[in-house]
Structure formats: C-alpha cells, structure tokens
Length: 312
Image (cartoon, rainbow, N blue to C red):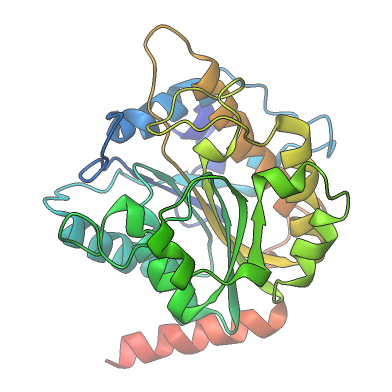
C-alpha cells in the first residue's frame, strides 16, 4: 500500500497527526476468510476510490475533511490472526487516548475484535452496532477464536451487541444470540418501526462495525461472502444518520471489501459510505473548535486512561 498520500488527497494542512480530529487506520489483513479472498486489498482500493470522490457532502452541506483526517501507515507484520488482533487493539487504543475520533478500514471482519476490545476499555456501557449479513458469533472457527466468523463473539460477551441486517448464520450461533437485539433483514422489510426499535436497544455510547456484505450485492457485489436480500443505500444512510444524531458514536470500522478489477463501483460505494459516516458524526461540529466531538463525560475517562498508561 502507498502511505505517502493523504486520505482522499486532502491538503496536508488537514492531514497531520497532531491537528486532525479523525484518525483512519488501514488494516490490510485477510488471514481467515473462507471463500472469496482479497480483503487485504480492500484498504488500498478504498483509498484510491476516495481520491476520486467529491469532498462536499450535499446532504449535510459540509466538508468534513476540514476537521482533519490523519491517515496512519497500514498496520504491518500481521503474521497471524492473534498477532493482528493484538496489534489492532494496541494501536487503536493508543489513538483513542489521544482523544481522536478513531476509524478503521479492513481487511476481513476479524480486525474488529481488537478494535472493539480497545473501545470497550475506554468507554462506559458500550453498545456495538454490527451492520452485517452474517451473525459472526462462533466462539471458535477452524481452530481459532480470531476468525472472521468469530468477529462478534467477544463483543456479545462484553458489550451490548445490536445486530442489523443479519440473514445468514449457523445453528450453533442461536445459543449466543440475543434475539431482542437482532434485526434480521427479512423482518426489516416489513417493520416500518425497525430503526426506532433498534435505537431503543442501544446505550448512549455506540461503536459501529459495518461489514459491507450487509449491503445488497446489487449495489456492492465485491465482498468475500455476498448474500442476497441485503440493505439498500438510502435506507442504510437513513438509519446511520439516526444513530449518529441520537447516540454518541465513539468510532467505527468498515470491513470486507474484496476489490473486483473489472468494476470500481464497490470500491467507490465503500469510499462514499466512510465519508458519509464522518459527515454525520461531525455534522454539527465547528471545524475550528478543538476536542468537541466526544461528549464531555467521555473525555474525562479518556484522559484518565491516558494518565494510567503513562503511569504504568
């Protein structure tokens, strides 16, 4: 991956580590996928597509990049799934305690295990909102708990896990799943109140993990395990904007882009989705103000964590 470029080609003044409010961590890992390979190429394809995207968002009438987006070097030397999870956890936490709004782009869905672990240690009463086609609740798969099929198991045990768009799972995952917090794709179609109901299951602090196979293959086919019957573009954006408006979204990741050399549409959709999510987060934030994108009660906890780590 090329690392000398800024995110989306934004001017260097908006891309420095010190001044940027937003951090973007690429995690090019594809060590456990079981069908379509190529998620390790996802971050590079996403970044290339981002360079060809308009940076004015019509819906929010904003240019969110002016809040500053620091593109970190891609995490490297990810020699095993366990090593990858630990590296993601350590680096993500190091950025959270700098009071940055931390985002990640994978890579396969197992990259979320370390990210969620870091956020859960830094934020009280965390909800993990999983938007995904698959439940990903296996405790182990193919001999490891760090498999993409296990991406949400730890979150299901340690956080308030809310699952949206699910339409594929193993029977064994039913023993782990909290049915009150699951919004299956087939039910979303017929329930006009599903967005409100989903929001009611969430705590104030929300981390979003967005597996691109949640979207219908008709609009995003380039993913490792496409499933028919997925979510469509505008209903997805409507839901996300409600979450960002009504909850304190503390960070997010997007995973499972497997680029197709014959079509750039999926890459561009992923790039647009990432930028839309940032636009929703910072919609009512003055780009010239400092450190105002976390709620005040959460800033204190991050500072405390920082002092604890320095003391150690």
